[in-house]
Image (cartoon, rainbow, N blue to C red; front, side):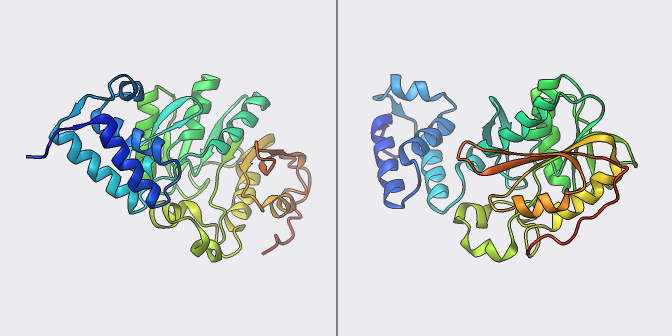
Length: 289
């Protein structure tokens, strides 16, 4: 039988291992993983540092720490990630929602959209479900991956949003002129940059949702063309930008109206919004490689 171990000692041991492996935020990571093993909130750790762990909890905690040491993201171990103040379920079928994506939500809310909205390439549904709840209106969730869409549907059900789900490649399930706002956080990492990504991203997050072709612009180009088909005149396109994608995506929407780019908290251009003017002829040009 495994000797009983106190919470504070278990945490100290895990923090040491995580620190030696140069895992970011080792103390926070250890606390989150132990809370997951215990099924309790972090406040319990602070209030009961001398409480003894059961053998089952100790085994689960050890397995979680080992998985993290191997590079598996904490969010895929706990199957949870906070986004816009809500708890979303995540698994390796979907990207882990990032804080900077909340700026996409904020931009859409600032536009105060009416009519039909779709989150294209929805992944976990973080954007679309959040918008449905914040706007108190339906938001379509579309993804080419049935596995990802199942996660999005589960999040919509858990959080109580009105979010119909459609399987399809970008806007293929939608009729011409059927949307008033299209929002997306598309794949935008160039394939050539794959080897430079953090191990946690490269080895665990879905490549379908990460890589936007050789240049990183391929999905953007398809989305803009799709948006011109499915948006009604005056409809909005709102896109998350990769850190170096602004100039290329601006080139794709140069014939659109009211093009605006908003930075994230680090000052990086993060969200592009543009209004469709169906009377202007398309003149996309070629985005940079």
